[in-house]
Image (cartoon, rainbow, N blue to C red; front, side, top):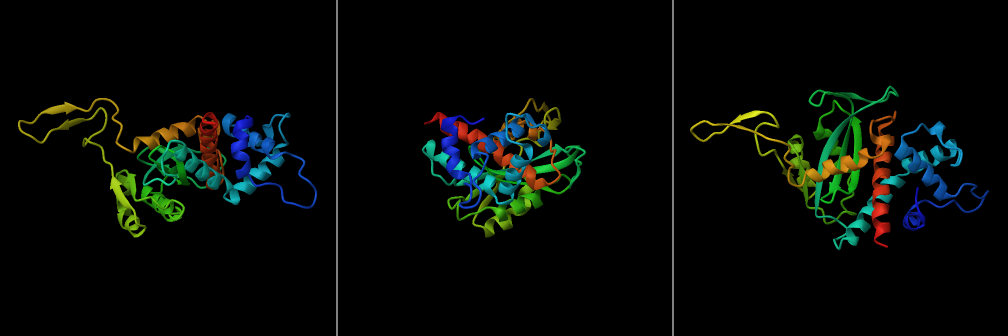
Length: 271
């Protein structure tokens, strides 16, 4: 739930009631608080507590603002403000892109099987700055290759709004997007694993005499680890622990809301 300082930051970014006609009965602050309650606790809409607005009212505004792109716009505005709070340019010069495969529920909707991760569900493709702030998200069936999700992210990115962006750090699965990135004025840099194998795999060194070494433990990759941290931030919300939505675009809205909640708390602490 938003305290007064946090709501003062967010209120100007939430659409106000339209002038004329019957006045709104439910304050915007109560509606947003109820949406965040669903996000944090992962409850069904109809299980909304009685001290919050009726679930149908809250769901109406959640979907209305999702279709109008409000959540994406708010998350991006707050990301710019948080960068400025740290003394950085509002628009980043470098971006980071990666994906996460998550299971879906029996709700239905588009889904697929990610053979590499052994997950039946959807992929969440995200684009962040080097601080892990979520700028763009795209959700699609898990059987689709990362390249296609990355293509949608790059083509859908407002490079006028993010005018300083020049480089994108990605993993090996996005290497086929170098041509597209170049056409958008971006340099695609593939950050690969430093070893041929992964944790627990024996690797033979090339230099004679042949020697067997063991790759020990987890090794964070430069730049790309910030995306994994962003996914961890999103995982703190129960609604995002699994994909419960029928429509992938609804999951995208929850991702933006998860970042909005995080950034508002950061900015409020700096007031």
